[in-house]
Length: 238
Image 1 (tube, rainbow, N blue to C red):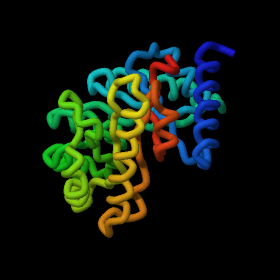
Image 2: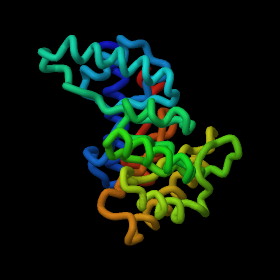
Image 3: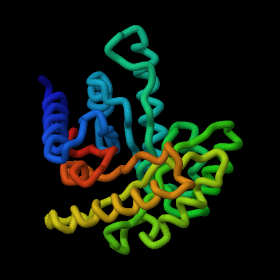
Image 4: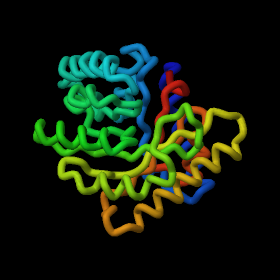
């Protein structure tokens, strides 16, 4: 096995263990592979192993890597081990003037934390004739340096997002504090899960509201135990 394959297997094993501890199915967890520091060959190998959800946090790098990956897919379209397409997720802070470029590549934007950004996403999605899946990013750690809507505004913002015709609010996203204190990390994730459940119980949410994106390389097992359905993992692979 290659180094990447070995790391992917370890991640899958750790996901299985966390699911077993929390009485969940491994099928309920989606891994979004964060490609921002990875070499093209490494990303290609990840795709060969069946990981087709890829995440980027900067638009300029997204455009470059997505173009390279599309070339790879096209050149290998007769190879049964390589999928027809991948799904790109914008996971970083998104400026409104970069929305159109982002939507030409991504069909999910995980980092929507203001009404103005949602309005721009809706406008550009309408112009492009598409419907875009979005996650409401909330700041559950309370750290000033982190992006994300305040916890107290989450339900109201979520309701506003659902009124926009070319957006589909499909869940929440959060980041835990960067700390070795697992109790603080767990508390942050638990808070996100509580808000997720609160919004899911509202009539405006609907059946499509089902994703809770939280947990990265250093804390994804805790995130699974606290209800994550989507993990954003990069450094543990690359």
